[in-house]
Structure formats: C-alpha cells, structure tokens
Image (cartoon, helix red, strand yellow):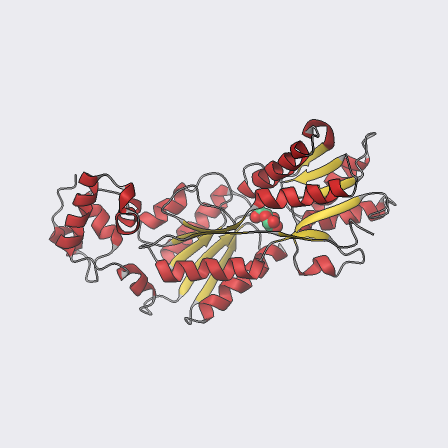
Amino acid sequence: MSTETPEAALSARVRRPSVTDVARLAGVSVGTVSNVLNRPDRVATATRDRVLAAIEDLGFVRNASARQLRSGEITTIGAVVLDIANPFFTEIARGIEDRLAEDDLTLMLASSDEDPEREARYLRLFAEHGVRGVLATPSHGSIDALLALREKGIPVVLLDHTSPVPELGSVAVDDVSGGGLAISHLLDLGHQRIGFVNGPLTLRQCVDRRDGAVQALIERGLDPAESLVEVSVDNLNADAGDAATRRLLAREDRPTAIFCVNDLTALGSLRALREGGVAVPDDIAVVGYDDVSFASMLSTPLTSVRQPTHTLGWTAADILLRTGLDDVEQVTFTPELIVRGSSAT
Ligand code: RIB
C-alpha cells in the first residue's frame, strides 16, 4: 500500500484531484479506481475500502477529469489510425472532427502504418503536446502503451477495435459477423471455392473477419481448408490487393469469388481482374469490406460489408469527451452487407 500522504500526492498539483491522484494514494491502478467508481462489485472489499478512503482524503469529486476535459485548458485531441490514405479512416476522422467541433476542439491525426514503433512515437508526441485525450486504432496486439497513457492521466478510447480490458473505452464493429456476411453472400450465390485476401493476423480486425468467414463455411458443412483459398498481405492497400489477386489467378484451382478484407484491397483486386481479362462477377465475384464512398462509384460497383464510418468516429470522440478517465463505455456496431454489381448480376 502507498505510504504517500494526501498532501504529498497533491503537493505539486494546484488543481482538482484526479483519478490518477486517487490511484497513487491508494496504491492501485487507475483502472481499479475506475472500477470502484463504476463497477464496485468487481473490486475486492479491502481494495475498495482503500480507494474510497483515498477519495475521501483527497476530496476527489468524480468527473473531475471529465470536467477538466471541458475546462478549455487544452483544445486538441490526438488520433492515431492505421493509414489516413485509406478512405475508411478519413471518413472516420470526419466523424471525430464533427464531434470535436461541437466543443471547439481540434484534431491531431496520424498514421501508424501498422508499425508499433511509429504508433508509440505518435503517442509520445501526443503526450508531449498535452492532448486532452487520445483515440487509437492499435497497430498490433498490445495496448500497453495506451494503458500507460491512461495511467498518466490522458483518457484513451480504442477506435475500430474492441477493448481487451474493462478500463479502456472502445468503439468497433462486430467483424466476426461482418466476415460471415461476406462469405454467406457468396455461398448463397453458389460459390464453393472462395479466395480470401486478408491482412496480417496481428490486426484484430483481420483475425475477426477471418473467424467469421470460417464460421460461415463450417455452418454450411464446408471444410474451410478446401473452400477458402487464403492469401495474406502485409499492407491493407490497393497494390497489395492487386498482387494477391494475381497470385489467386495463377492457381490451377482458381476460385470463382474473392473476399477482400477491406475496400482498398478490393479496389486493387478489381484492377488485377480487369487487366487479366477476367469478367466481374461472371467469371469471378468480388466482395470488399468498409463500404467507403468510392465503392458505389466504380464502373463495377463494389459489394461490400458496410461499417458506419462517420458514426464510429463521432461516437469514439463523444465517449472520450463525456467520460474522461472516470467512466468507460464500450460500443460495438453491427455491420450490414451492401450488394452491388461486383458479386450479383
Ligand atoms: O482497421 C483495419 C482495416 O479495417 C482497415 O484497413 C479498414 O479498411 C478497416 O476495414
């Protein structure tokens, strides 16, 4: 247990006590304080009593941090996504921006390029800039750097990613369901051998979409090892989708349909099919994921699993501003299949 006195915990601070002050005095994590405030049943009695004593000693008033968020001291929110060249993320960024504008706040936006070191560098820059909070699409399995930010008193909400821990807010789409929608649609059209252009399994989104695809095949009594021809790509962009599709076309057991993990890879796939003289959907059907703005504008409009991109961004920013460090909200949206000419005539 921490021996620090309430006065010492606040000595260097001339401001309202925060969750971090309470955590330090009680000798627990910020997440534990958040649980005492919001889900006391999850906290052992002795720990809960220590935290409540620290709250009493410091005169902590809940929502103090959230109130600081609204106090006008700092006007910027940091957001690190995978790739701002991907329209999925720029449409999400617009949703974030529209919510921040309601509170006269601005957005500092960065791309991790799925590189954990680049992500960590931006998180450090956000902290140095003293941002009011951070929205992040994790570039890999670990969220330790994001939890560390929260420990420093910077609110964090995961974006396009479910939270593996109770103390981090999150906004995501049920990608397992989304992968199932894409494959079920192609199975309904009679396709039995389906190419799957998927990203790195260090990305939760790619893991979940694959899980949904595999579940859909198994539910139809099909063997995924036979029916799903997977090609893994390192980057979730058009060139990667193009190269993966050329690998599928070179196979003797060429699939009759291709499910791409996002619309950018699907765009590249359509280019490779067009340059290969393959008719879409008559020779090979194509399904993407995101339903970004260009999907409906293509000469062969793209069938895609729609994510509510603007709503994802707006909701993540709203949760961050409303809850600060004191509360946690985890929201998962349901995707929708939008059928267009790339899969069905
Ligand atoms: O976030 C990982 C991927 O999921 C991105 O490429 C985006 O397109 C979304 O579908």
